[in-house]
Each structure stands twice: as structure tokens, then as C-alpha cells.
Image (cartoon, rainbow over all chains, first blue to last red):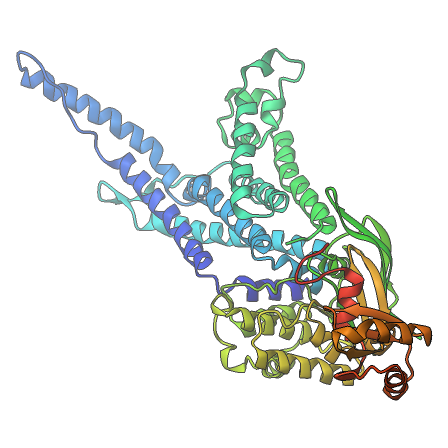
Length: 290
Length: 308
């Protein structure tokens, strides 16, 4: 395993696109955090017109609006302060999901496109090589998340609201570690499914198409209206998108009533493990005509 | 006799096309065997199956006694270059080799030494730091051979190793193969370049339409084709033919009215005497034997690039 990891380091350590993405995604996560904070703490524009103008009523309405906004900000500030900031950054899954899909298709589909899958076959055990590659992908995405979380740990100490440090609003976060683990686990299907699709498609471009279709189908299944009247109403909570929504959504969200959180977590992990196993199994027996 | 590579009854279909149709192949230890065949004869498919890249529909393969399947790993024991050489385009020539060495767990010193050695062997030392995507066809071919040689394996399987090389490169690779064979390696090399196989290999296997049509040393394969070629005046041909056939030789008229091929004659002197006695005096009398090319063309039915 160690040797295969070393080989992957030689293979991919000099790919500039990977390094650029690797550096870019945590920065994007940090920018998203700061812009979300700025958006939440920027006073709303006051545009309240009366005809005929009534300066006293206008001033009163303005004061009321600012008071409401301030109340909202004060409620939201603890979610930007450390340690809740970690959950906020880890919850911005979009850029990391895109990175995971890109990495998985590029690092697996690329082998087919270049034909180097032949070298892989001749050099080392195919199944073990792909298993290590999945591990490398998990590690890379995990490292990006860790860097993003480092930003999330530092930024709250640099931000302030109305001149006071943001950290003044820090509050304990219930189920903090469950929240972090859930957010990290939510990324795993976006590695495993693309790896399977890359093995099936044997290219990056076609793999992207299959991945798009898969997750579109997943969302469609989750959102389909007929489950509630079917004998299996819990299906939406077991899809990739459904299980993530169930785990990251509000406790009183509709999906939460369908299955316990543990079931959705199990489903999420199954969406990570089963496609990986299927990809490795398929790869071991594939005719390599590339 | 120790068989290093043995394939029995290999069959492989791609849709309606039978790429291999019961191919048997045996390569003895320490021999250099040429797998000859026209384009589409099944050579590359056979090699793909031999190294486990592709599963045969039927038949079996063993290399060094181990059954080969898609889960078999050539590793350091078998150096293979099958079909067009492939590389990580963003990596340099030496880093492409380094990937293999890393996967095999080689220490840095051994890796550096072997990479320098094999790149020197294939005359790529000067371009070792350049990205492989910038390599010419000939350089890619050389790098492919370097990949196969990296572990200094006792068994080499090379598919069209001189493809894309210039004449000087072909000679270099030919000399390299001869030198490698001298080291006791077992080498299976596929090619459609007959002269290269004739010069490099001690055994030849001719494959056509997915099956073996002949196998043996180049001498044995060509031994059936000894003949004496006669050029005569056109009016002497019928007499000469009658006399020679009466003497028990097999005579065929070739390439127009003035050339006779005589098979079975012990020597030219005997023919000259017989013909002179009949009043025929050949312009030319040449003793010839089939070249490997003649055998190949005869067995595969390929002529002028067309398969009948």
C-alpha cells in the first residue's frame, strides 16, 4: 500500500491543475465565509417612501427595521464565531463536492484516457491500486477540508461586529463533532460515485455526463411527490441528497420524521462504500483494450 | 525444454470478428521468438491476453508456470510493451519510469541507477527531463522499451518495438534485442517487419486470422523453398520444361515466359548438363531459397498489401 501511495505521489504530485485546485478551494471556502458574514452584518438599505412625506414616521420605521435586523444579526453571530464557524465552513459543500468530482474523474478516468491503465495493470494489483486511489482521493478532499477548517478557526478572530470582536458572541455548539463528521461523510459519495462512473465510462468526459445524470436522478428521486403515499415513504431519506438533507437539515424538517439520523448516516456511508467496492470489483475484471 | 510462455487454444471475439481462433503459442526459456502476422492477424490481441490485459473467451495462458488472468501482475518479472506505448503526459520520461519503481518499492539509489541505465540503453538520456507529451513517435517507442526493461526482467514481451523508429533507431533496437537475448532472456516480439524478425529472432511463429499457420526457426521455415531459377530464351522453355520434368524435378513457370523454377534438383551442374544435352542454354541459373518473406506471403496469402 505504501508503495502504491508513493507511486501515486509521483503520478500526480506534479500536476499543476491539482495543486491550483487544492489551493483554490479552501480560499473559496474562506471567501464564502467572509462574504456570508459581511452579508449578514451589513445594515439593510432603507427605502421607505411616504406620500406626503412624514419624516417622523419614516424615522420610526427605519429605527424599527434596524432593530429587527440587529436582532437577527445578534442571533446569527454565534454561528460565525469559533467553533460554530467550523460547521458553517464545512457545510458549504458545493465547492468541495465539485473538487471531489473533478479529482475522482481526473485521477481515475485519466488513466483510461491516457491508456496508462495498462501500466497500472502491469505494475501492480489492479484492485489494490484502485483502492489506494480511492484512499488518495479521500485524503486529498479531507486535506482541503482541513485547510478550509483552519481558515474557519482563524477568521472569526479577525472579524468584528460594530467594533466588537466576533468571538464575543461565541457559544457552545451542541453535537459539534457529529456535525463535523456528518459534513465530512457527506463528501464521500461524491468521491465514490464518480470513481465508479469513471471506471464504467473509461473516460473523464463521459464520466462527467454519467455523474450528472446519476445525481440528477438522485435529486429527482428525493423530490418525487409520490413517496408519501407509497408503502416506502422513507426512500427520500436514503438517497445521497436525501440523507445529506436529513442529516444537515433542521430537526423539524419533513425528512427528519421519516427515519432516525443513524439510518440516514448508514445510507450515506453505504453510498460511499458500495460504489467503491463495485468500482474495484469491475476494474479488477475489466478488459483493458485502451 | 522449459516453456516460459505457453498459450493454449486462445479464442477471442470482438462482436462478429474472431480476433483469435484457437491460437497456441509456446516460447521456450532463453529463446527470442518473433510473432509475425499481417495487420489484424491477432498479434496484439494475443499479447494483450498473454499479459492479462484482456480475458480470452477460451483457452489458457501461463507465464513462468503461473496462470495469467486479469488479476495476475507482471510486476518485475515480465517487461511488456503491448500496443502503442502509453505515458503520463505531464511527467518527464524519467518520472514515468519512476512511477513503476515507486510502485515496486525500490529505494532511491536503485531507482536512479536503473532509470539512467535504461534511458541510456534506448538513447533517451538527453531527453529524460522533458515532458513525455512532447516526445516524438520514435522517442515514445524508445521510452516504452525503457519501461519494459526497467526491472531488467527475465521475460520480455514487446509489440512492434521498432514501430515509428528511423533506420538508425531500428538498427539500435535490433542490436539491443540481440544483446538482451544474449543475456539469456526469453523474448517474445511481435512484428510485421519480416527482416527485423529474421535478424533478431531464433524462432518464428506466423499467425494469420487468429491462428498459428507456421512455427519454427527461420531456417526450418524457409527450408521447403529451395529451388533453382532458370532464365531461358522463350523458344527453349517447352523443351527445357519437358526434359526437367522427365528427370523427376518439379518445374513451374514464373513471371512471364522466360523463367522456370526447378525444385528438387541436387545442384546447378546437373541441370546444366541435362539442358545442354537437349540443346537449351540458360542465360541465368541461380540457386535460391525462400526468404522468411516468401514463407510469410505464401502462408498468409498477403501480397502487395492485399489479403485475397
